[in-house]
Length: 224
Image 1: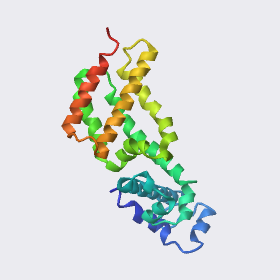
Image 2: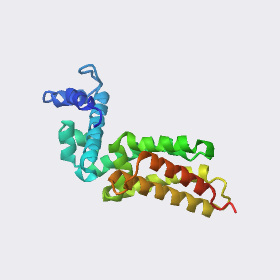
Image 3: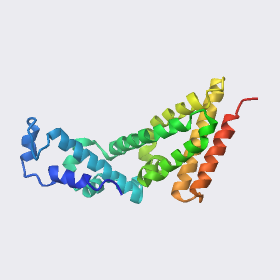
Image 4: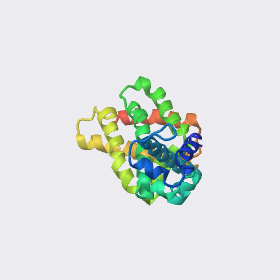
């Protein structure tokens, strides 16, 4: 459940600071506790994001509130607003960070090399399984949290373009190429979401086999 070192570090940096000490640091690049003001701010921000991930893993994005995140990170609301203007901004930042982590295996997944389909499918499935908190945020919460709607709309075209430019590069018609990419991206997102929320009961091997079969099927689109 997240990085256990972040919250103690953040508490060390700010939770026990005497009144007025942090304000004094704000005036210049003084060193306190062996760290700079920037380093302490970064540690607090990281602790807040990690706390939000833990809450998402337990109860979804609906459980992420300013107060709940601060309690989990053992920080006051002052430090929340130091990094984020609102709960929605925190979720936006967190979602984009997690999306970046998924982009690399998705880019490899789109490589047009049938000989690598199984290995690449295993990489993608294992990425989904690696951190249930991040997978729930990226693949499940967009279907249930209105707070992530606009962020998802902004981020998903990046993944669709990867499929367009790699997996479906053989399709000359740009409209058909985009249709194929959109269909595959949304289909896989829905499949993984159902798998993670328990409505799809399948083993890891069955999901991998499905990904391999899907790749083969999509490669045959518009070839005749």
